[in-house]
Length: 150
Image (cartoon, rainbow, N blue to C red):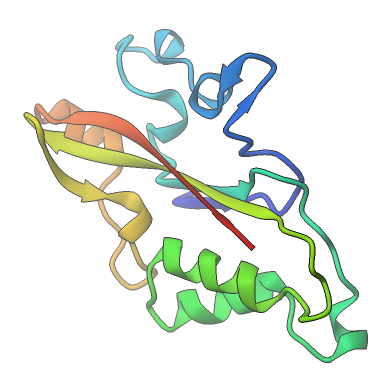
C-alpha cells in the first residue's frame, strides 16, 4: 500500500490526548531495526482529517464525492497532496459556511540536512521506493504533516 485515505473524523488531528499525530501513528522502537518509522516503513502517505469530516449526500446536491474527486485527480497524475487538497475543497458545498480542517501525514527523505524527496509530492504514475529502502541506503526518514482549512 502506497497511500491510505481515511475519510473520517480526527484521524490526523495534530495534537490529541497530549500526543502529536506522529506519536499516535508511529512507534520506531517496534520496527525490527529499531529506528525506522513504522507507519512509513512501506506506507508513503496517510490522508485524512484534523477536524471532523463532514459527509454530504453529494448526489442529491449535484456535486461529486471527495473520493471521486480525489481519484480523478490521482488518475490524471496530480500529486497526492494537491489531489486531496483540491478534493476536500471542491466537494464542500457553497452553502456550508463551517470551517473544517483536512490533513496529510507523509514521509520525507533526507541526505544529511538536505531534503531530497517528500512523499506528498508522489503521483500515481511515478511511485517511489519505500522509505525503508532509503534508510537502508544511508538516508534519514522524517515525518511531514500538513493541514488546511476547508
